[in-house]
Length: 242
Image 1: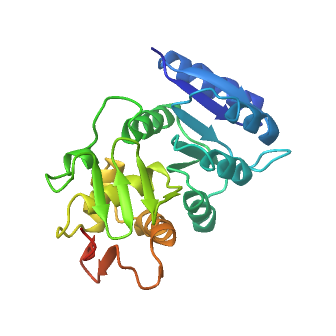
Image 2: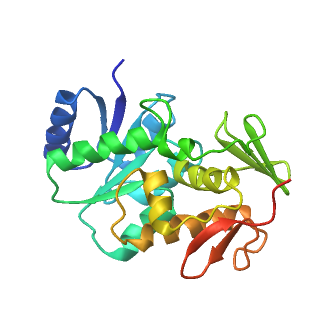
């Protein structure tokens, strides 16, 4: 069965070029040329394996569309934009994007990023490196922490009985620590296990995702209890395992 990708890009020439290439790679591609059309497709119920999202869109901005996606879906989102500043990247990742590619880009690189993002999010072959790090400390398919429940079957987390809206990356980071209490992970190890890619020292990606995760699960993100920082080393689960 072909995987369906939603391509959101207002430049029709770029859209046709990207769509044609991805079709040759075996994907079905739906296209939207403005933010409002994109949101209609997102809310229309179609199951997408990945969303390719331009930031500079008419009618509704790419950031608005990204927030609409994250309000109800963990589908991987790959931003493609001419904007290349660290601020733009941090904003995109902070709002829930999974990866970022800067225009102009090669079709070979784009296709590789698409394939990797889908694989990492679990839409392709079952199982990920992050899952392989899970140990017998799991209690069935649910990990119970103090005030927090992590469900590995539904890829969801509850804080004091209420569901927390986590992105795919945030969930896999939480799962990595919850399932491996006592184990310290360096930033390079976290990137390798969750992003399934080589780490080249880009701390911004880890820092943004960790900050967003802590804002969602911690009572006081500036004094985290669930994920502790070991300065100069990495991170570990706090003393919260039941």
